[in-house]
Amino acid sequence: CTLYFMYIKVFVYPEARTEAVQSDGDGYVISVGVPASRGLANKRALELLRCYLGPSKRVIRIVSGHHSPHKIVLIEEKS
Image 1 (cartoon, one colour):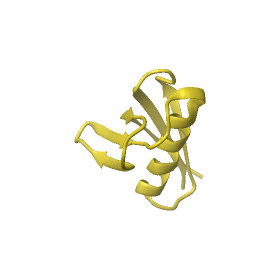
Image 2: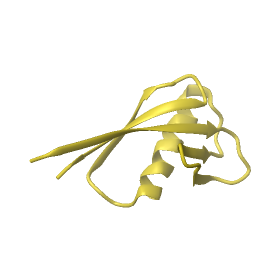
Image 3: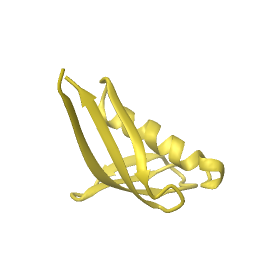
Image 4: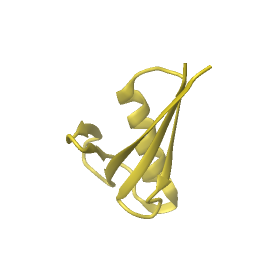
């Protein structure tokens, strides 16, 4: 069993009119329709990123930037 992982940069826009995930070359820009309070925007951003990357046995979690719009996200996948 091999473990693959990568870190990506993510910028989250809370309380957006439309939800979207866009690649910006250096990472992703994620617009979410929920407020940033109580971690709601973080949770929704991870859900949208999972859908964008497609179905897999990936573990996706925020490792830096929990209280900032600029985040570092870890993506782990077993093969």
